[in-house]
Image (cartoon, rainbow, N blue to C red):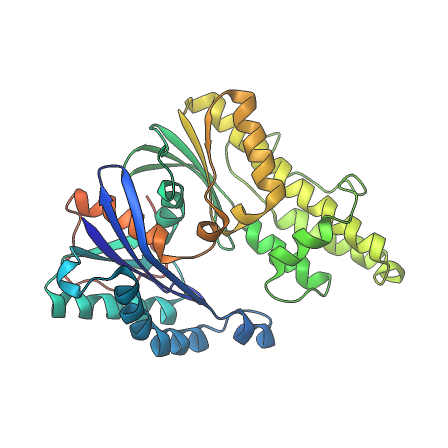
Length: 340
């Protein structure tokens, strides 16, 4: 089976073509056009601007993907598209494009949840995909949650953030430190120069018997520490210590909650998913967690940790195998689409 996938949930325009035979998935084309340089001037993503950029580049990228894969539209078996969650104007461009292609090419259409796509990034470029049951830690700009996966397409949410997502906290702390957009990678780079034990920032909900997260208090604590030390804001050591201590607090909570979920649900595999999965310190801590609990660890390659259409194609492939198709006439973008 061969799937063409479209991802346009935020500020990356992405198209991929994936062929699958059993559990062996092959990306024949995987194109991503980032808009970071455009949105840096605004300090964040402007939905209408993102949508216009998607509209300008999406169809040329689809043509390019077909050329790279050395196929024509007759050799596509299904079309997958991110239906949500995300920015409404941006999502709408991808969804409407996928609907048009499905109608024009007479192909079945598969809607994919963006979060599900992030989980399926661990099915790419591997001969040993995750085994079920699997536990996924999703860490992105808008989401932080633990999801238990019984089989393909069967998800149970075990816990989630009750306020800010981890990625959102990274971005907001970056702004406090005057770092440019996108903030998460900037905080990570600054943290490499700092002492993670310099400041004892709070670790919320660790004393609670649930699997939920909270990062709003941590973010506020960083803000107060900066206000208390305004004279040190230009001090490189102080700034790097703030970044390192903040990052350490986030990762500590993520790993402790995941460890609790492993103990309670005994998964065969654990999966790190979402844009924050590109953070090296988190990746190393997650690998160590798997070794400690003797459970298989799956962390996607860096290229698939951030938004891309390859992950949507992988999720769409398994949905297509299960005949989870929709009528193009009734599909609409859903900014609040949930994985469960």
